[in-house]
Amino acid sequence: MNFLHPEYFWAMATVPLAAALLLWAVWQRRQAARRFGNTALVAKLATVSPRRRRWKGALLVGAVFLLAAALAGPRFGTKMREVKREGIDLVIALDVSLSMTAEDVAPSRLERAKNEIKKLLGELNGDRVGLVIFAGDAFIQCPLTTDYGAVRLFLDVAAPYLIPTPGTDFSAALQTALQAFDVHEAEDGEARTKALLFVSDGENHVAELEEVVTRAREANVAIFAAGVGETAGTSIPLYRNGRRVGLKKNAAGEVVETRLEETSLQALAGEGAYFRIARTSSSLPKITASLERLEKTEFDTEQFEEYAEKYQWPLALALLLLLAERFVDDRRTTRVGERESG
Image 1 (cartoon, rainbow, N blue to C red):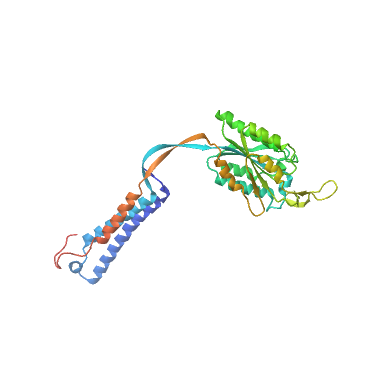
Image 2 (cartoon, rainbow, N blue to C red):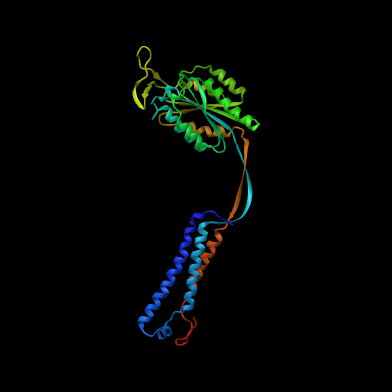
């Protein structure tokens, strides 16, 4: 036997409390009888049967005990159940180049992208997820895992200063993502369905996009892309020690403008799908439907104990006792003057 909610055993304290209240009520009645005078005469004149009143009290205390037991959730009959975990391997490549600090979407392109990725993690179920951050270079921020909490932690600390190399190198991001896939394939000894999601503003890319798409296809990786920002130009803020110190300027001293390059991201997505993270809306949640259409592979098997919950039995008995207590009449059935034992 086991209990689903053992923390509710404190409710058992109501059993002696109920018994104590009933005993206190008996003592109060006896004190009242003594104030009337001769207790033997009062007992003969009383219309209430002490024995039946004790039965009613016992039924009430028993019902309280059973209700407390039902609250704890008793469970019986364990058996082992095997659950297969199926899913895909998804690597999210997040652009952390300086242009991602632009604030055409609040609070910034990078922070908005992080928030949308976190929402996406909440929709996934059973897929392994990894995180690659990239700019002019790339590295694995979080290896493939089913621990989405860990992915969120690594996502929180992603920032432009982690990769000082300027630019947006999709080729480096792809190569690093392939390394993340290969590590787990080597450990598992079998190929899995692989998907790569680029989250970027698509600007200032330094790789031939057709080459990236071809390499991904050869590696059997489905590519998706999400564009962050607005197509209208905006400035790039500069920060030092957490404080804004100005705007990025070129060698001529002119303020540099950045904009979302949807064309490059759409070309990158190729046969996959392109999604837009704009100022007031986001279509990234639709990617879950695209991921569901990919072939899932089994990567883990878990065994756990399964119990048959039986809280209904003590609950039903408690209700039965309460019903019986209501129907037990504590009045005497004998004539006045006849002494009922008890």
